[in-house]
Image (cartoon, rainbow, N blue to C red; front, side, top):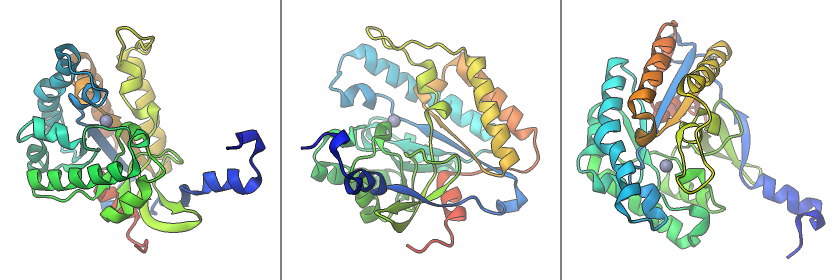
Length: 295
Ligand SMILES: [Zn+2]
């Protein structure tokens, strides 16, 4: 096994080109002549983050439980008030633990999409297990909601060497785990267009790094909620100016607290104070930008 500094061009180029950004997919116009697409997403992980690490004590599990008990009802009420269809990425175990929650998303006009079985780290399970868990998760969400998911966010954005072929085998239309743009693009695999839309994410548009703390570790929140609000407002403002997508990744057990729902509310008030805003699910955006792609 050679060291990276010993790799020849074929090797380093090969690694980079396995999964790459292809053509940009920023459309000339959004539906209803909107100027910006707003893609809100909520990763309803709840207890699966401690569970996937084998943490089974009540303390950490209760932090996840808060997401289902308190965060989700608050979020659904807010989305209803702003008439903002959104996407909920939900591990199958989380959906099984909280009877009726996944179905309630679909019933309220939101999208349910894949987020692993138990929030497993794809790069740490064998390739066969990643595939098996992804198919089981798709079957489970379909059984619980009546809708077959068309998109995926790999848990912890942990996109393995095998994730793309599994996404293709599942027949999904989009992924939302990669970061090569602010706006959508087509995923290219080893130089070949795949027809799969990437709706990119970023840690700066994720609530976790700003707000989570680790009791016995070094992770501490360092940005006050209104500091986070100003970052997200700036992200939205430039997305609007550029005619692109404003995408957020939020977690019910993180953003669902009173002091944080307050900034999400202010952000949505700022967004709707502009004309030409299209609130859409990730699937709707992927369909719109990817309508000319060959699959
Ligand atoms: Zn997650």
